[in-house]
Length: 112
Image (tube, rainbow, N blue to C red; front, side, top):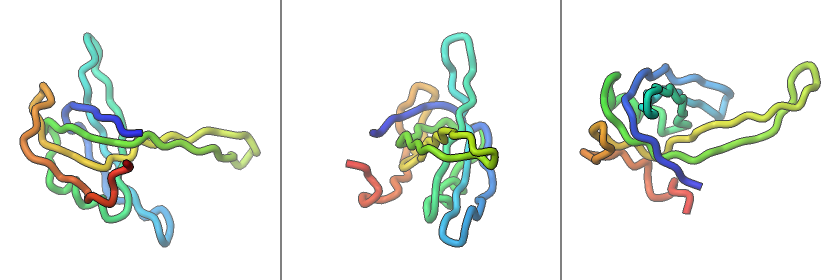
């Protein structure tokens, strides 16, 4: 399932090597929600991590993403649910979500 969010790029973090075969890069989008500001964390994975180098803090962007979740177990044996917002496309946009240019991660990455 694909979703989109429009906001201002609030933070971009360094790429993290999670394992020998998996790396991710997180970023935060500041989204205006009526009278409240929301800060939402997304991630890119593998070869998509470098796409974020093209953007700067404070830029308006539209993020297309998939909602991912899985169950896991803590060290104490408690069951927990992990949720990730996996970005698969980023576009420059103004505050109204109008597209300027885009960085599509590739046709083979589109979930449909």
